[in-house]
Image 1 (tube, helix red, strand yellow):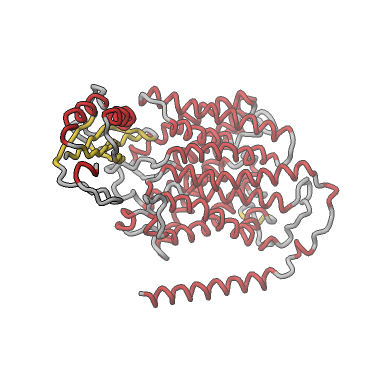
Image 2 (image 1 turned 120 degrees about the vertical axis):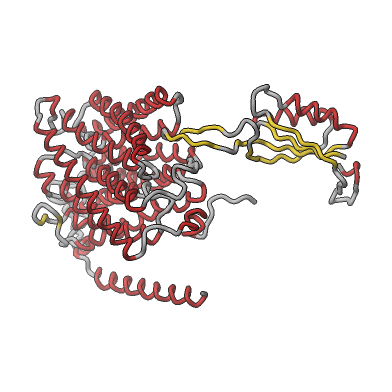
Length: 112
Length: 443
């Protein structure tokens, strides 16, 4: 099992979500986050005073998936979240040791 | 620790009971209430309805108008403390005004400088009209009360995010008493500026120059916020600020058109000039920043609108619609420039009270001397150059009095309780450090 964390542009959330559901992904967790990569921050101007805003608002999607979906999920997120301009985000993949469905106590891929 | 808190609370209770006792004893048999006779023949129902309505409109300028306007511009950790400044100004000044503020401003004149204490506790002020007036004395008093309230609340934008709440309370009482009341007396209460012929329809000098200049004194005495110029201090909720600006615009019809003190043609004229100048100033600020910075902003439009409201205030009943257009255009551009100058000088007037109210009010007062043509005023462009000189005297007197007076009051408050919160309290935010509350919670 894999845990996929994708940091994407906020307005791309719906596209990514729909594409993942189409693939058969059953659930996901979404968080509003802030951060920066090579894009660095941006500047905002209020009443003529310019402020450097280091942390840019992004969306983090977390999806737990069975191993056989990994390649397709990564391709799908990368395609749906892409605008081609700087700041499109990153996808992090890590191994997932175990999953438990709290209601039934099921474990493993069946609990995803 | 616990015992100390209880001891302090007990002491507070004793103070409050003493105050209450004094009020009950002192207030018995207020002749104004006792003598509420029907001398109603000279009361105009229309005028009275309009002034009472206007009073409520001006109240809405402070709370929720200014509370939202300022509350949206601070960081999220200070929004409650900032809104509280407006709300508590309303409460504090309402009490001060009824006890002695109104009397100092409007009771029979002493040497052109101050009103007497003859109307202390509203003794002698009642439901019957004063001589030559068509509204109850109470209606005039409460209309003026709302002006005193917003003037104090306006200043709070300059020391936002760093002043002790206790210091603010004492400052509000002192400022309303020693700065606002005398100034209102000078211009409207039979004092020397009114006698001189200074034109101030609805409070350009009394309300806006005085609050703006006092704001400068506050910014200078309190010093910069921690991290000023290094950390981003961007507004946390601009929708609040825009709603606040809209409420200010809405309430300002009471402020300006209500200042005709009658439901008549001058009121309608002031209504039209107010709206025109405000719209023009919002557009003017927007265009200037668009050209200068590349983007038009809603904060700019809202700020420009307020600048226009400020600038038309002294002129509202004295100028025609086309003149008000020019006053608005000048206000938007000038106040935008003033807000930028702040960065060059380095004083931290957090929410630009000087830039908008001080500079906008000064421009409005001078512009009144240029454009006045109706309602008993004649300005330079209409053949009376002397009026500009009189306006400049009024402006200079207000600047000096408010700057020096506020400086002294701040030093007094600093000596008694200290003006600023501790550095760690400031970093934590006023909401938690001063009030033990938080505006926004997650879960």
